[in-house]
Length: 79
Image 1 (cartoon, rainbow, N blue to C red):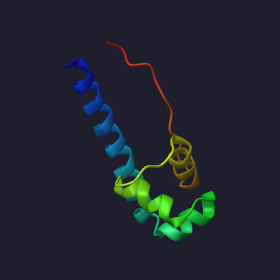
Image 2: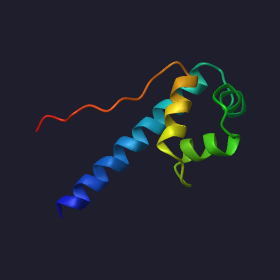
Image 3: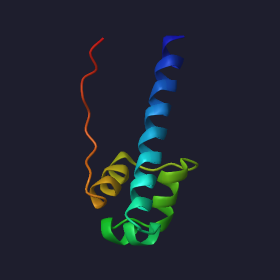
């Protein structure tokens, strides 16, 4: 069941990132529409990222973070 554990971990990390981006957006007083215009994505894509209910690309997630002045990076996990 190692796959399930890793799959759950990835989901939780994804959810944390999505929630954090939504929190940052709100703390900056920005609407989903304003962020969408700033990063060149649709409002629907921003909504999908924040809700996690529909699919979105990793590139969209990166573009959203960059529009807020943040970056998403990948680090090697030490076991």
